[in-house]
Image 1 (cartoon, rainbow, N blue to C red):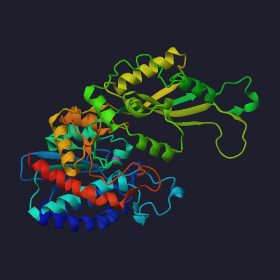
Image 2 (image 1 turned 90 degrees about the horizontal axis):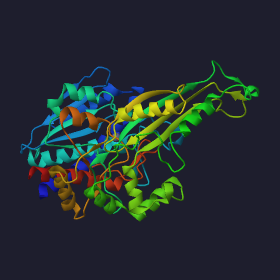
Image 3 (image 1 turned 30 degrees about the horizontal axis):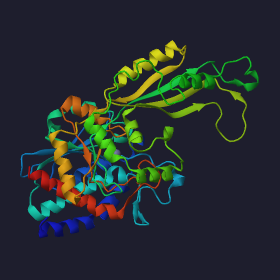
Image 4 (image 1 turned 45 degrees about the horizontal axis):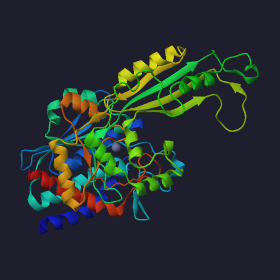
Length: 454
Ligand SMILES: [Zn+2]
């Protein structure tokens, strides 16, 4: 990095704080449709002020997508993805300061959305501004798509990519990223699990009854509990016939990555973070890492009967539950939905209604591919440490399926967001560590410069 760029990087690093404060003040909660146009306008202006050609892309039913393009020195075009929406701030009583006001506390900047993923957008902007001030031009061409619905599952990304595939075509893509792990390795994620999200409803009587009648009348709560219990055995195996049919084993490169990723110190930190003694099945090390290649059935919520304070002797007629299945390569959400419905029917639970609320396919970019290997070398060159490669992230990026199917693009995510394992995305007191921020911006400068040298 030359002297001029180093100096500009320092100046832009100083600007981070002001920009992130303004950005977090915009209460862009997608689930409640709060301040979405204001936030889209703010983001568009930020890109425009950085020299991007910008537009807001309307898609029926969605807050506008913000799109930017900036031609650079080389023909290589990188697609960047971010989202300007955030999770709701509830439960608000657990926040130690106002959720949408960036506050510095114990070396941390605290605010809703700061780690997921407003800081990444600002870090990328600061990096580009440093390069532009030093050099007048970006080393590569950038396309940037920023949506306002990630936190509610990107329901219109399929429509966006079908209507605007050409705008999004690129030579490589970076989704929202991570940071550096506790061993200072850059994080590089190449695969993401899919998901099937369902809601169950059961109604066994037309109204609730006095629980003095429980000897004679059916219970909606017991009915749904038994249906849910039929889905998983005591060892955590899913009992839906055919559920594991398309599950594939990790390949050799993925196994190697899992092996390298296993970190006993990190495992200890996670146990402390959640206040637990052990992981499921007492798994540790490689065995624990490898579990991510197994699909899950998680009860996200259950509602029935009386759940307020004190006593109310009621026999509930109805029960409702929500469940997410995290799917692994090569499972398909619609196939699993059909198998789930057949299973409940076969078990005699025809009365349990199943409704699909969301779905996404797992998407994996091969580790051995050219773009992944290029980014891997860049990470390595940045701080002379091998990056930590995550072959399959436990969570889901719902937009990846649409990107793959409609645009033909596979992407990855890498360092460049000043986050760490304790940032508390989606939780109260979400934060970043101030000390991680300069490195995130510097990494983005380094990566963009290196990609220009391809
Ligand atoms: Zn996010």
